[in-house]
Length: 426
Image (cartoon, rainbow, N blue to C red; front, side, top):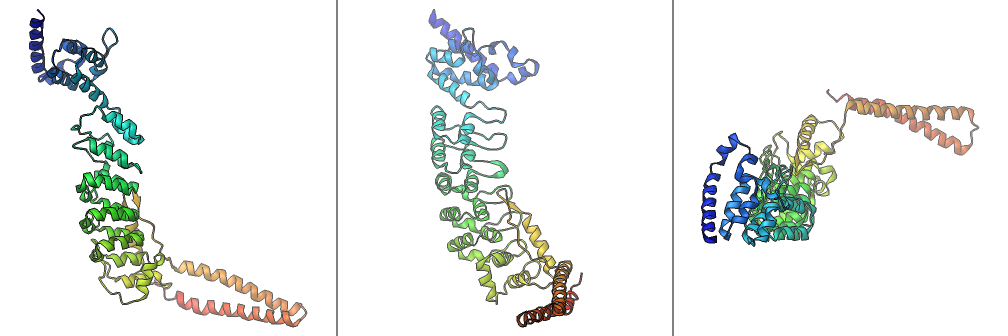
């Protein structure tokens, strides 16, 4: 009799399995909870004989995930029932399904464990997980691997994830990868771990065309730059999509001279790279010349007359204009260019502000007026003291000197600065 029942159950499962393929049409007219054979997953589990029937349970859960936590009259979930009947394949299936339940942000338990950074929790979750299952991104487009890479010191966690899964999703927001995330964290160890398993990520670009090396150069992470170039030196020649900037230009734009030197130590000919405005490495060093020892030493030697940029100035001319106290006709043009460059950002970090001298007619006039008041007061006091105070020899000498210097200061301001201000054309 029992054999007959098994055959009947098998026939029913086969019929139900075929019905599942047409359920999308059925859902148009009836909600899932009103489909009779879906009211209790536990009933099907008790009828199953043979591990091969777990695929049928998986189909049901795919159509109606809420049944995973539904209880029967005894308060038992499908997992309780599967365990009591010794269905190991179904137990594993149900555990995996529970691990993959998503919250309102589409995060699974593994997403949260990666964010927490607890290696033991991740290890416990992965114990029952299918190595071939690709964990997809949450609503923020973050995969567990990306989330783990954003945490500094996550080398062990990344190793655990990469060793467990045969195909690990590595994406993040804005087209970034887990390697971009590791660079943003400044974690050289994490970069070694990821690059060992996913070496092709060194050339992957985000939505702006930035590679992980662009991130490292912009952020000034010298050790990270070195680690990336050890893996693939060719990435040093890749320009981004917006401005056509190679990593060495980004490092120079930020004024990170040690990072520039590190890149050039791997590929010296990178110094020939130019961006979309025909600005080269020396142009960007000139922009940072006032705060960069290397820039000052290069341009003080003179004779650097290579490659005029889009605004028709060589790096030497740019440096000279920015260092000059006098007004220059192209000073405004350079300032506008620097403001445009300063509006850019990479890896959520803006370009460091440029320190540009701001020489204007109004500024010089205010400075002159302040000096005139001081000089006039000194001259007045000195003259009055010479008349009223007894003429001690030491006092008389210092008083006369103060008077002479004050008059000289007044003459200088009226003569020299008036001549200087007359040269400005506004």
